[in-house]
Amino acid sequence: MISRGSSSNEQRTLVESQDSSQPKYVKMVFILGVNFPERNLLKASQPSYARSKSLETFFGIGNNGSSRLLSRFNIHPTCRVGELANKQVLDLTAVLSEMKIENDLRREVLNDIKRLKETGTYRGRRHALGLPVRGQRTRTQIKTPVRLNRMERRL
View 1 (cartoon, rainbow, N blue to C red):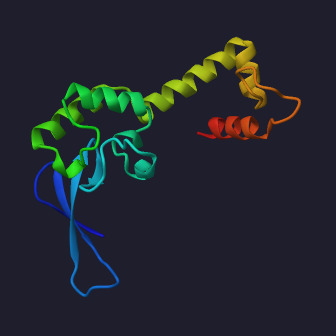
View 2: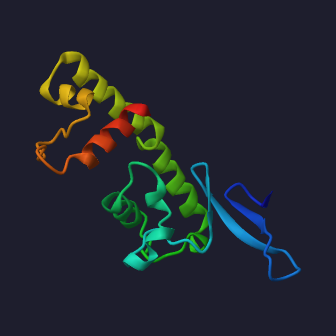
């Protein structure tokens, strides 16, 4: 994949396909350091489109957060990334850069867990032992919480 920039927010990317002899160019939109193909939906309204949600790929932005962002800028939920105007892309990027998402949010969650462990609270001890923290059953059905807590500490 070769990237060739045409403006600050749009790029054309060469996609080599095996069926045709001519290369195909796919227009990409650059939002907060991530390139999204223009065919991706901003927010999928149906479960079948769940793989192409562009806003929800950012850690810390879920279904409600993406809905609020789209309604703030009067963007239809089924709008594709390529249909956005340049001003809308810049506005979305500006708002996303002000929000606490991705690494900042991960760091804050890990610091909160570390603080709970250091103060010796019940929740902190449960995190340290790799046990369920929010009152789930531990006599049986404990494998998933143990696995998730272990992954959380390795970050």
